[in-house]
Every structure is written in structure tokens, then in C-alpha cells.
Length: 381
Image 1 (tube, rainbow, N blue to C red):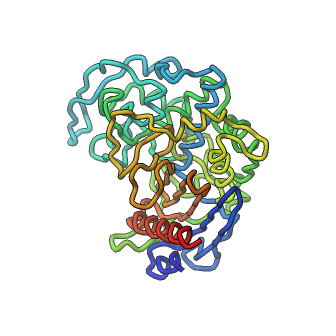
Image 2: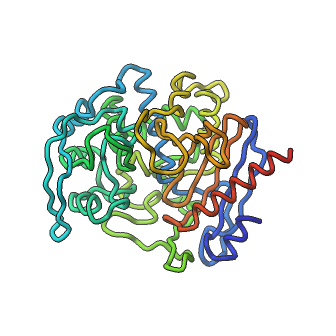
């Protein structure tokens, strides 16, 4: 009923929600419609653009290669992407013509800093006048794209662009996991989509979770929406030159964005979360050693302050600390299309809610209500 209130208020078309406890799905619902004409109800097998919920998988891929000895956490990024051997830090930016001045950084970024978002690699949408202009001018997208580009080219370019701060100086949400995706390719010798398929999604049985899908699956792909000034959703237009809403089923299908590129079902994401909750093991298949899996949701940013709420940051997840609702140690992330998940080891619980409105202004509201409902139900039982 909570989701229905948001649907009736025209804030979201609907949502697919999944809650698992003690390794079993205990609640699953599909509310609302995957299209604006309300002819196609949401289904459990609908494909949702996961955007930043891709980051935990690419972080796991990185940690697998750390375990294999192919990557070290303190390696300089330049070992894998040569343009990062000499990096600059932004000093000044001129919005009139998108020119900037920069100075050499005292140190260069490391793999650990990419995993923790402390290397200073920006996102355009977080700071459009500065980093947005710099990235756009150099043809680097924030999100996965339908364009015939590769991360080999774009991530090499990022090393030549200025960092927003000295490596390791602060926490800044940016294209760090996209850069990591390219590091995974170089270290493994395999393209990112193939690597993740062979080492994470297929072993875990995540059959409908990938960067791109055959055009024939377009009827399973939910429609993407965006909010207007009143906070009501409408169909997401094509945001050229970088972005077409149908990128997972149409277009070149060559750009494997490690930070935003994957699409899939709630049930498949649950399998990934369950493997993490069980310290890297699912149904006898191990994707990480227990100690490695645990390290990913331990505080990895030390004295650096985390700007988003009561939490710390691990490798690809934020970690609750003195949160008003979530128990300490609950780890989570969300995505730009209004998807969210959290893994609560205290209660042996996983919560996933998938919606599809790009940067909806209502996300905090619906996420908080979802948390309150879940934890008040737990308290009653």
C-alpha cells in the first residue's frame, strides 16, 4: 500500500520490492506499471536499469583480482592505465569557455582510492558547471551509453583530465568505479562484461543481469521516466549525445560502464546480495574469501569524512553507523534510476526496491518509509 500511495500521487509509476530473511525470500511485490499508458503491470521478471547498483559488482570483481594477486590495493592506477601515471589537480575553471588551470598532484591515485571514491575523479552530474563541462567536452559519459565507445578510450582520457582534489584528501562521488572497470579489463585480460559474467553473475545463477541484452528482450525492459518541476514522472527523453533510455537493448552495446552499466531483475540482485551476506558464498559457489567479503563492508576511509548521512564507506558500499533506523553495519547502495538495496547482517536480511525514475526527488521519502515499515514489522515479530 505504501508504494501505491506514491503511484497514486504520480510520483512513481510503481516498484518491484523483494525482502529476504535467513536466506529465503519472505516478501515480494509488484506494484504499478512499467509504462506510462498503464497497460503493462510490473512483474518480478522485469529488467531494471541498475545504474550505480553496478558498483558493488565491479568492486567485487576488483577484489577477486586482488585475491588472485593480479591487483594490489596500493597499486597506482597508472600501472593499468598509463595516463594516470602523472595526474593534475584542478586549480581554476572558467565556465565561459570550459577552460581550466591545474597543477601536478603530489601523489597519483591508487586502486584503494578508486574503491573508496577518494581519488578525486568527478561525476559530471554532481557538479555540472565544472566537472560536467570538463567531462562533456572530452566525450566522457556519466552513465552507460548506446554510443559505439569503449571504456578503454574514455578511461584513458580521464587520466589526462584534472582531479577535483589531491588523491586521498576527501570523499567525492565520481567515475571511480568506471575507471576500476577498465583496471579489471587490463588486469584480467578480459572485457568487463565477460569477466563479470564468468566470475560473478553466471556462477551465482544471475541469468538476467548484464550490461546489454538482445533486442528481443525489450518487452521485459521497464520504461525509464524522469520527474518534472512538480515532481511528477514522465517518459525519459533521449539525452543526446551520450544517452538513450533503451541502451541495454539497442545501440552499439560496447560501453561497459563499471559505475552504472548493468541491468537486471530484483531476484538476480538478491542472489548477489545473499552471496555477500553469506561472506562470499552462495549455494556452494564461492565468489570471494570470507575475509575479503567482510572487508568490503568495513570502514575503509579512516579519518576522511563521509558527506552523505550517518555512515562510513567500504569498498563499493556505504556502511551504517548510528543511523536512526538501520542497525550499525548494514551496508547498501542505490542507483540514479531510483533503485535501492540494503544488506542487514544483524537481522540476516536483504531489502531491494526497484523503481525507474531518473534522479527522482522522492527517493529519500520513499526509502525512509520503506525502512520504517520493514523495521516496525521486524519489531512486531
